[in-house]
Amino acid sequence: MFIFEKRTQIPVRINNKNPKLAGIILSQYGGPDGELSASLRYLSQRFSMPDNMGIGLLTDIGTEELAHLEIVGSIVSQLTSGEGAKSFDRYGVGDYYVDHSNAVYPQSAAGAPFTAAYLQSKGDPIADLTEDLAAEQKARATYDNILRLSDDPDVNNVIRFLREREVVHFQRFGELLNIYQSEIR
Image (cartoon, rainbow, N blue to C red; front, side):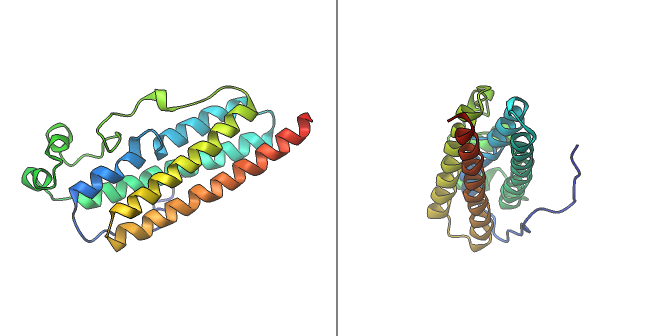
């Protein structure tokens, strides 16, 4: 069961509009290494974990990734709120506006829509946790790339927070993997 608090883990207050930057950040919403993929991956993998420790960790991180989805969606929404077709076109993302207007739609920065093909769930705790370690590093790398492209301090503060959470998730998955691997030796 989930309990929803009407606040994000970190406040999202973006002052400047920038549909192009929104289109880049959108990859962390619905792209292959984004928060939607991570949350669904972990919440699916939890069912094949061998004990409550694994189930609990995947549930906790999976639900936190849902919270990150809300944060990324808030950034994208605030970067585009009130912007019209001409603004999107001026920033080179008129194609997005034609299909979605100011909506937050799950897709990659390249425009590929979200697909369940992004998810990996093998049913083997060692394989799944190894996949999860890689997924967290890919998400961290994507956040690093966003930081290289963005000069907006309001956006960057939130992106840095999300990046750090990916590092923590990587550490937690590594700890659990080490426990499971030591049990099978």
